[in-house]
Image (cartoon, rainbow, N blue to C red; front, side):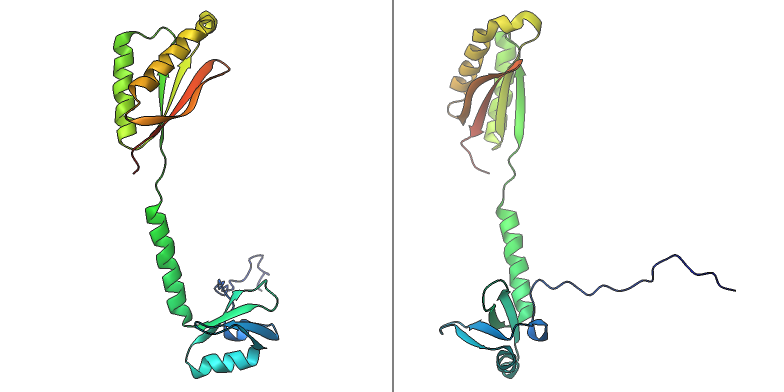
Length: 184
């Protein structure tokens, strides 16, 4: 004797279309937009017949409009072009990388020069630099030294980047942001 299974049966889910096409458009009337012609309000069945005569699809572009806006076009080609545009847009995007450089209020000249070289390299690569002075314990008394250190850094990096945020004290840190002049 078979026991009833608690498992759900596998049901293939229909592909979720991005747009309603042809018989999936349930509105009685639609606004048909065609290139080089004025938009026309017509019955959906007429528009589908018109699309069939041209061997194309009736695609709902703007479902929230009243009546919904549709176009007659090759749906597969339309999806292909949309994916192609999305891929091009993604390729053009540049990711902004934030690099941090940490100083102490009593940072020595050699250490400053070493970190300055790193900051120059980061800005030449097109990254943002977040320079901060960390005050530990009683070193908070030397706020002015920290600000002078950051302003000196900004002055040295003048030809590589632009100050986005002037030195600002936030808790135990004095932070300054420098954006690269060079775009990726």
